[in-house]
Image (cartoon, rainbow, N blue to C red):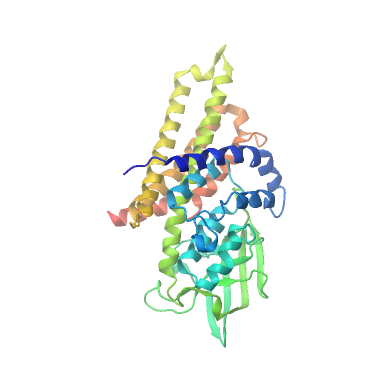
Amino acid sequence: MDLGFTEEQQSLKASARKFLAKECTPALLRQLEADARGFPRALWEQMAQLAWLSLPFAEPYGGLGADLVTLAALVEELGRACDPTPYLSTVVACGMLLQDAASEAQKRAILPRIGRGEAVVSLAVLETEGRYAPGSIGLSAEVQGSAFVLNGIKLFVDNAHIADHLLVAARTASGPDPAHGITLLLVDPKSAGISLSPLPSLGHGKLFEVRFDGVSVPRENVVGTTHDAWPHLAATIKRTAAIQCAAAVGGAQRVLEMAVDYVKVRVQFDKPIGSFQAVQHHCANMWMDVETAWLATYQAICELNEGRPADEQIAIAKAWASEAYTRTCLTAHQLHGGIGFMMEYDLQLWTRQAKALEAAWGSPDWYRRHLVTML
């Protein structure tokens, strides 16, 4: 398997890195954290102009039809820049899910708007158990006339406060098989009966509890087939987890560079601390974490890109890349000494993002347990 980038992918990475170094700065991240909305509208619109928001969509929907490796190459650079936009949730998770499962009318209505930066879509799956499993989906959707009526709570919904659409996984039937009876519904977050409550987060995204109290949703808002949405959801969870690993790799690469740059100039005992063998060992361990995470990530993505299930590769990549990013950040803090633990120093921005990515789309422990069942 060839894991190298093509010339076009390398060009995309180079141009993305240059653009993000200028436009997605630590100063912007700090500004967004102080803002209740936390949405970089100008950056989002610029990303649309660069065709990043339409990158994975098919040409009939205004997209470029890029493959998963190209998408991951871009997401790697977004992770390197500690991207604060809803790219993963709107484009990778919801946009590609809609492209897979939605009706032609739904795709033509929503995907071009995502590509133009006019629509943010958030996926509402998790509930009180916090697991991406069919048995954990209990929000009820009962048929009343020509509509479904939703009652229940969704947790950790990314950027629900700025979303134009919520893509909600609801329980429309019950039975011995929990995977049967799950339906995807497009819901207007401004509908009567919806209330949002912000949840604390280590990362830069805004997470919300979304409460549905008798929310009426027209039956034509069903995405895919009633009762049979779980296969599409399961594929989306796997694909998004794999692509998110590329963001973790990009972030870890940047943190390693920050640490190496620092140990070259920090002088102790009249020498740069980078000349000390113990410090060099730390840097070598960080490099190994970054490189092995990159290899595991792109092996999983290449398998998916070839149309293979890749369950084992995704589990390995998610478990390893998530923790490798966190370990790289913690080691970088140690190498920076006291300054590395100050909120005024930029390193903490990446560390908090690393912990947020580690928990998103399934924890490393969950993927390790899942991997065991496949062996």
